[in-house]
Image (cartoon, one colour):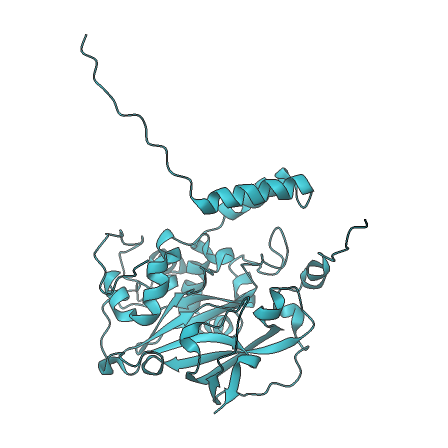
Length: 122
Length: 231
């Protein structure tokens, strides 16, 4: 029985001397959102792997920065690196994440990064 | 002859994760993915890393507005000036899978305080800050900081006024973060060396603020938590 061949080195070859996520620069195409856009985090199924925190699902946020391009973690976890997407740094109002967050601290925020597929325009 | 009974020395318990790491490491060596020498070289390299370059980066940014601008815009490029090459560092030359090379420097202002956490695991800018402290990796810190940031900061001894915006940075993807705190009063005319001394690891994570005269992390007394994490 012949052994299956796995290409375990393609990522090393791509990223060495360039960096990850820098090695995916320019592969995602035009970004769907821009700085200042209001978005909502989608509640997609994540049976196997995800890095989209449950507490962000369904919450509103503002795009603070387009940070880099990279495969989404749901794909990259399985070594699927063909589909590169934009990653956005998002700012949430703590009050929107936790309804009983104290009113006295209504200015408090939380920032985190999510890939484009998890976001819908608001 | 009355012999005094001494208790046997305690053997520290090995956690399940440590057992798992040893098992996977030995299998990888047996399979030839890397050698025992590679592993030793990597471990020794990791132990040379610490928070000093990040403290230097902050001190430089306090003294030089142009460098501050660079640090906030391109943390990876700014790191080169304090001797940290995120892209070409040993041994993988693209960071490690848990140290991706996108450093973001979060600039505090008198009205904005950043604090960093990784709720999903314990992502940490190791090339520039070294190994994370034990408390940073605990579910308690990770779960509670996003939900009750002010209470957790207060447990660290940092009480912030109501009109300061607390911004929790949940480091969940490929960016790694350090905090650029506000330069404290009483440091006028200080040299870069003097300034770098008061930028402790805790200041760089965001759970403390630099103070003249304080050059080490506060001791970490164990206090009962408000809203504790229940396993």
